[in-house]
Length: 289
Image (cartoon, rainbow, N blue to C red; front, side):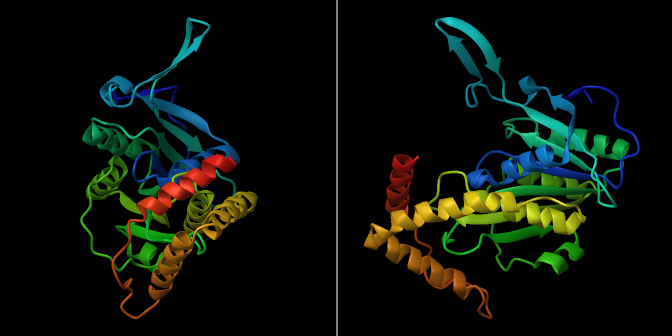
């Protein structure tokens, strides 16, 4: 495991361990997946297992390390990180091995090889990715969960999406696909969030945490996020109230969202870009922060 620098011996006797993957990047809209992973680590208690070698994974000209400068004196330098943590859950639920951090630029297949070897040593037979993507979703409706999986039982529990799409893969999507090919049951929990919201979207993390808890039968607290969800909803409502164009756009998104319950499961009409509306909402939220 040269790519992965372990902090110590591997933990023994994990109970039905599941690999959780949450990377930043374009499939982490509103920090839905990475915040959900942080919540798991903070709530359930974790131990870091190791960190991947950043020199082999990141293009530092694209994802530059951050340097702290204090009155002309260079202090700490923070390199991009991709880390593995382990969580021992209480009761009969699965223990968790959590891969989270910066989406790597390089070495995606090498990461898969390392994870497969690591999973074999720990007894991991299932992986779950956590992420979020922007879509034609109004903030006035609940965030919508989309599932990808190699397991029919997961579709039976959460439903199968109706879309057939071809999209550029993020590292997280590629890892899910390759882990599935390697014989590890692989699922992805993805939340659609409003495409006009560029800030953190706590409802996405809340939705993902509830899905993980339901699938793995572990207790994960989510009600503490209610206040953040309501506060953000209020700010977006206030922003929309000041613009007839924003109100009209959100009404159109609401109609499309509600139409997904139709027999064909489709959203009628073209999907609007909402670039001008997004800019106006972002300006409003910046002024309110």
